[in-house]
Image 1 (cartoon, rainbow, N blue to C red):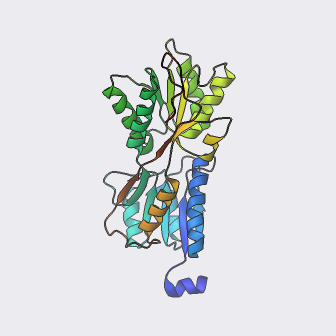
Image 2: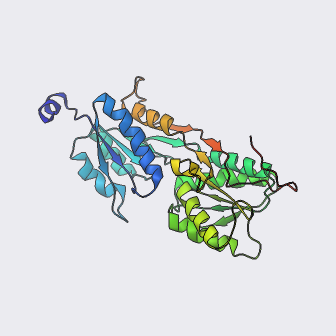
Image 3: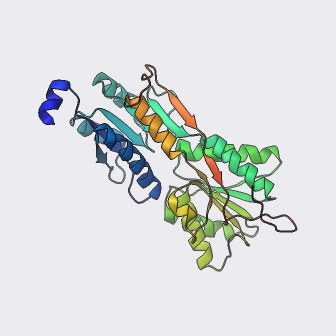
Amino acid sequence: MIARSLMTRRTNIVAIVLPNLTDPFYAVILDELTQRLQPRGCQTLLFVPTPGQEVDEILPTLLQYQVDGIIITSATVSSSMARACAKRETPVVLLNRYVPGLEIHAVSCDNVAGGRQMAEFLLGQHHRRPAFVTGQLRASTSMDRQSGFVARLKEDGVECLIEQGGDHTYQAGFDAALRLMRQSNPPDAIFFASDIMAFGGMDALRRNGFIIPDHVSIAGFNGVPMAAWASYDLTTIRHPFSQMADAALELLGFGDAEVASSPTTRLIHGELMDRGSTMSRSPELKRVRG
């Protein structure tokens, strides 16, 4: 393989940069990508930055492996490093993140539309005191979900309580849920920026005597397999994982279509999964299924 790569100038290796291995969202992304690359005769090289390490710090090391492409999930890369990759003719795709103005391919769930979709759903269930728990600060995913959610609520004259989670972790959701429900006028629904945060929030509330969804409805975003487990049964916006993986590989040049010459951002709609963690607040308290 090494000798062949010297002749063809291709290694058939795609580097995948994941921010962590604790959030089940990234396990799903990794599985979707590897299941598509291996039938093409390609292998994956996995990079996980250490806490506090920026992607720009690891890209020079990554480029030494002469990979055929780089997929960076839920992280950003600087303009200078994007130019360095372009100079080496190494295609790069941001997955689950985009940076306006950065000349680099990006594929993401349409997070604004997903936020609006969740707001529409909760309004239809007669919730009038919703809260949104943010994820990582300055992350386009969290900001877009919040933007779509808040904007749709305002259209119906409903104000949204914003609680800073700090990052997309189980503990952040755990702590944020308790802060919200200990207020004098707690929310009747909490929409978390990610499923892993929602799991933390649900466990925190149950440990403190709250009944979900009787006392408060809980919703998340991502649609990881754990969300469908009976212990969570979480209402969530499910990422179009398969479509996102296909689009990312296509932009890297592993698809059938011709690779776009100019930087392309593709936004793909997610799907709302209505489950048992939410309940109608109408006088009849009947669960709305649709």
